[in-house]
Image (cartoon, rainbow, N blue to C red; front, side, top):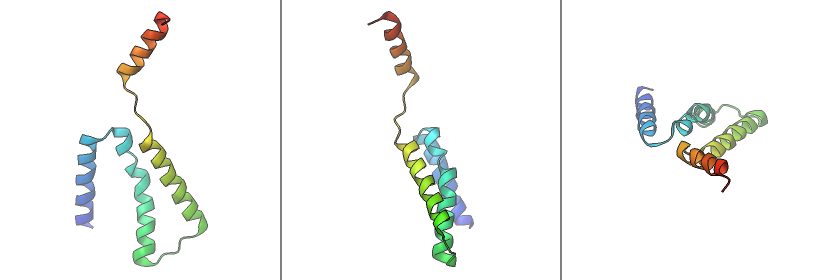
Length: 87
């Protein structure tokens, strides 16, 4: 448990330095899905259709968030300036 926590925390800190925060925050949604999978794999816990469907929705949502393009504020300001100038 300590080793897994250490690895997870180290990965989280590394991600904060290399990836936008909005994408790093998705770990909070993925962790329960990983825990359910590990419970099934290691402890032979039962996964019914509701758990599977909920996990699929969570994973699909995280994929949508992480695949979205991030627009910078500078791009938004330039677009607003062009629109205001009427070009």
